[in-house]
Image (cartoon, rainbow, N blue to C red):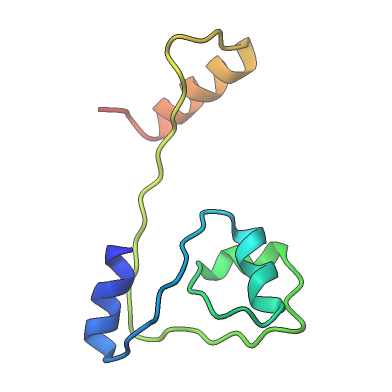
Length: 95
């Protein structure tokens, strides 16, 4: 939420945050039912039908999010998961 609050300060708006949700499907469902508004990555909209929602792009900003690959080290990982982790490490070396 820190990124959005910094953006708020720069552009002079005050959101009334009543809920946070990591599930884009649920967020867009709530917005489409008139339960508020949201700020989500533009590319998250590509997988969803948004015919009944208004979409505005935030101009002149660079919001960057970091991704992480997380797994439980105490659980069995199938070979496919191990291969994925190796592929991820080759492209994005883990610290």
